[in-house]
Each structure stands twice: as structure tokens, then as C-alpha cells.
Image (cartoon, rainbow, N blue to C red):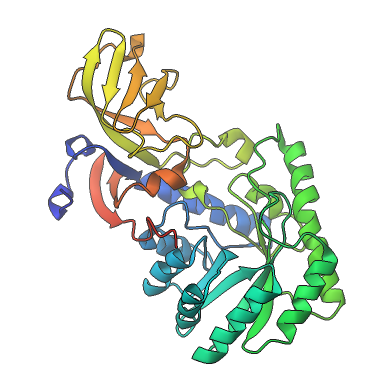
Length: 366
């Protein structure tokens, strides 16, 4: 049960499975990203909260110097705006009048900026902005890597910009362009070339728009895996990494180029041992496997396989001391989807629960 009575306990006394957040690592990660950008680039930080979905963490990032946040969905933006965050980029298209009415309403007390890639959507945003009496900044999304949302050519961007110019109660604020994680890059040189090839096209779109007289205040891009490199490109004004504050096994820290620490763990318990098989209480409902199986902290080389309710671990020499009832830590392969399975972060420092933070935007897939 989630109660204040858990504050002050050692994390091994908590009910499992549950989600642990190492606050010293969180503080380190927030400072590491912010200091790098402040000291080495002209870029601002607008972290993506789809990783942590927690207003408390978003406020800590802003207090450290972030200019606002990025969201994936209107539902996440609702939670963050209600928590007092004033500058929110939605790095996605918001479709449907029900959601557009919410978007317009949020802009009464916060700057909530959606991405668009077609004129019909821009026109509906204009309609609801005028109907409710607000002005909504728009970002043209440019597809630079993923072959999903976004305009693909400079002429398409120019045409959409002209449409926006002639609509009421909206205006062009910037460009949203996501280059993906760059996982295939083997070293810094390849990562530099990768962002030049991908984000470089978004910069060309920005230059073309400006040349035709359109104002483009912001070019927002970058993941945790590319932020160090994308932030060095002239023309990029802000970066939107998300996973860096928590970290995950799917990221190779050496390829990121910044010394982030693992802050997120799933606490589990040993519920059965038979010969060479260890069974843990944290299955796919507690730690997701969309980017690979979780890693056992006590032995990262141990093979793990998740079922719905259990994590199955092959016995190794390092694990022979395990007994039923022992608590163990797992490192998720993917922080974003794992966090979305939980309602709370149990926040620990030196192993002791310091606070419990609601993950208020979890499940907001709307």
C-alpha cells in the first residue's frame, strides 16, 4: 500500500514489485545535461517528459535551467499544465475536435504548442483557437529520419507555412524534427555525420522558410542519444532529450558521450527457486520488454526472460546466495514504457525512501 509510512524505510522493506528512483543519480543527470548545454552550446533544454511522466521531475528540470518541457500527447500536456508548467511543446499532431478543444483551453493559462504537418489540422486548430479566444503557436513537423509524421520537402513546408500565415488565432513558432536515437552509430564521428544528415535537413527547411519571410523562432530536436551532437549544430535552438534523467539498458552510455548514471530500478522479490531457475515477482506488467529483457543488477550477465507476472532468471555463481524472499533490483531496457506501468516513484537516497512521487501522466495515451 502506498502511504507516507513508507518514507524512512530502507527500499528492501517496500512492497514489490515497485519503481525506485535514485535521487542522487537524478540530481547528477539533470546537472550533467544542463551544464553541458550551458557551457558548450547556444542551445536551450526542453526535456521530453514521456520518459518520467512526473510533474515533480519536470519542475526539477526547469528549476535547473530547462525552458519548458516536451510532451508526446495532449493528455500529458493537461497533467503538466495543471501542475503549473507554462511552456509545453507537443512533439506530435493533435487530431480531433475533442482534443483540439482541450488544447485551446490549455492555452488560456499556458503556452501549449502542437506540431502540425497538414493544412486541414492547422485549420481546425485555428477554428478552436478563435472559438475559445486564444492564440496558439504552431510547430511544423519535419520528417528527417523515421518516415512517420512530418512534411518531407521544403516546398511542402513553405506551403504549410503560407496556410498558417493566413489562418486566424495561430502563428508559426518553430520547427519540430526528431532524428531518432542514432543507435546504429558506432562512434562520435558517425554520430556527428548522422545528425548532420538528418537534422541538417531540418536546418535547410528553417533557412528556406526564413528566406521567404516566415519567422521561425525555434528549431527543436534531439534524443538523449544525440543531444550532445545535435546541440552543436548552428540553427538548432533547443534539444528535447528524455531518457537521460532516468537512463535504461537500451542506451549505450559510451555512445551518448555524457556520463549519465542509472537512476531507475524495478524492485522485485525472489518468489521461487528450483535447481537452475530463479523466479522473480516482476513480470511484463512491472518491467517492459519492448527494447529487450531487464538486466539483473547483481549479475548483469544472467539471462532473464519475462512472462506476464514473473521474471525468470538462470542461476549463475553470483546468484547462488539467493533465497526465497530476497529483494533484487532490475534495470529496465526501456525506461519510458516501464514507468508507464507504475503509479509512483519510491524516491531513495542512500537506500532510504526520502519521498514518494506520483507518476501523474502515466497512462495518458490520449
